[in-house]
Image (cartoon, rainbow, N blue to C red; front, side, top):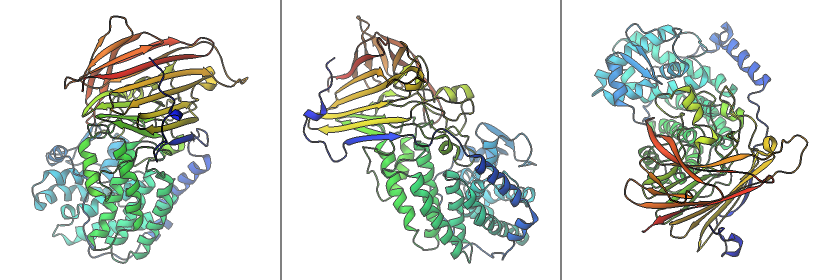
Length: 592
């Protein structure tokens, strides 16, 4: 295969082209000892008589409005809840005589139950307010009786912020009772939780969990009378926090699209609280959504779905469509993620999304949303996904975060590995270490990127140092997509890293993997140097390689619903010589 044409010899690059160097600054440490001790001290304080005194205050007589919940619930789960089973994350609890705080409930189920997120599913199922109230009010009564005082899990600031949002958004289901004592107790509890967040929200580490707490605090300030100062404090907190979490190109600091989606939905829900009282949401909401949404749209392939990145599951097209209708930017998209490290190449019917950034720091991964384990990030640097029209040709295997039900532990772990991504892997070793607790360790520290476009097509060249310390090797990948989108040419190069006494050197075997989309049938060529790939719709692509034989092996793909699809993968295997190697490959569409 001929090397892609030198982009510098082409016409001038477009406005989105350029060279970038992204570094994983700050090492791989999680929360510091001081931060962990501060969190423990705060939990002790919240359980003290002093904090209980601080929670006392005026009892509201009513809510000033009901914000619209922007996310539809799962009617099937709502139906099961009506039948007496609360189901979440693969765990089920019978609601009759349910003890929310009983030992044995998984943390993810507890976070779901304690946040009252089940109200969303119930609302999707019940035909009217009265029917829903008959199911919801007994559960709320039982919860209030169980957690009248501080509980470390039930009153966790992110969980409490979400509980306020769901209570406000689905108030007709829980505040329609004619029992005055119940109404007084519930309205008083809402005010108490808001007072708790007045302090607790600002003691959280930067992350989605803090946004959850501040979003609930913002809504409480608007919907509970006398909350002007509370609203201002929440806005100030969000104005400081959101620029830290959302990069200038709209990507998340965690590099996970599922986190960006969760943040966008939180901001829309909180902003709806202002709309519910005929007020204008604080500008920080629209400003942040105007960056988040185009970045997410730019990561979608031709089927409208975002692939598996950052340890997260694919995001369904319908979810993105709903988001596009909720923000002013609509279907506007970002192509070059100079800060997030995701790049989009598109021509004709072909769309390619490339991961050209380092993994997130461990401390970023640990500061997730309520009920999420610290499993953000993946080891798939320089992987790409490719679609032809609405059909996926090259994919990553999937992810577990964002799924309604968890995947088995070994499978969830395996989906984050380098081998589960369409990229190069040396000695069957992850380019970034994944620790036993799910956090990311040493590996890729720096990624360099050069992107150019001209009338001939699109070039992208990127490299990383993930194998430099362990094997003394630098990795680079070069892509060229022609102007018609019918010819993708690539080259993967391994070269010697700069000498260092701490680096181990020696010849290594490596594999380049291309996981095929669901329904793609692969047939090997007679010379063993390629394959013919037939998409479900009938279109055919020819894959060829030079530098190593091409094998067809089993693979899998996890869809947005968590369903496992058995697929295939193309694997080019080779070995370095003199600490260097190069493999060239191409994918060409046959016909139009």
